[in-house]
Amino acid sequence: MNNKDYVALKAASKVSFGSEKVTVREKEVDSDGNVLQAKEERDAVFITEKAFNAATGEALSDIKREVQLREYESDKARYEDEKARAQVQIDALTQIITDIKAL
Picture 1 (tube, rainbow, N blue to C red):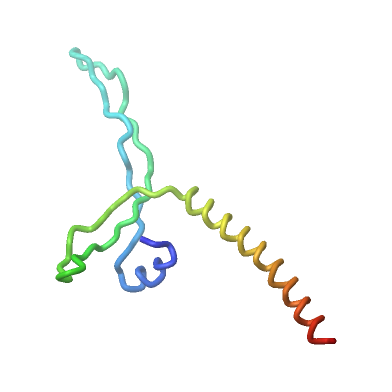
Picture 2 (picture 1 turned 90 degrees about the horizontal axis):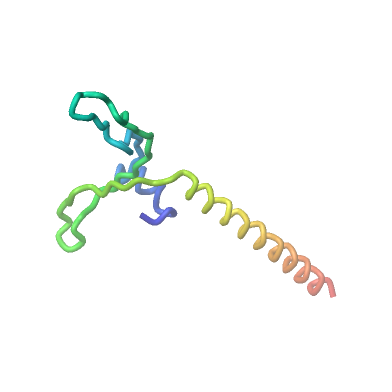
């Protein structure tokens, strides 16, 4: 999924986020029944996308993959930096145009 398409896909119920427990390590027990290692789980966030055959329009199995919040936060910060740099350029060009038109 392209991030810019998320709002439209969400509105059309084609994509959604969910959280669930993911097993990191299974419980280990010795031959006497003593627990050697407890089961370990963590919370995970998944994105589920509806999939369709482009040629036939037939629905395919949903695509589900784990995502990391920090990646979205990093991308957002990068785009905000780009936006700020672009705004400096826009402001400078606006001043240049204003000054030229004032001649």
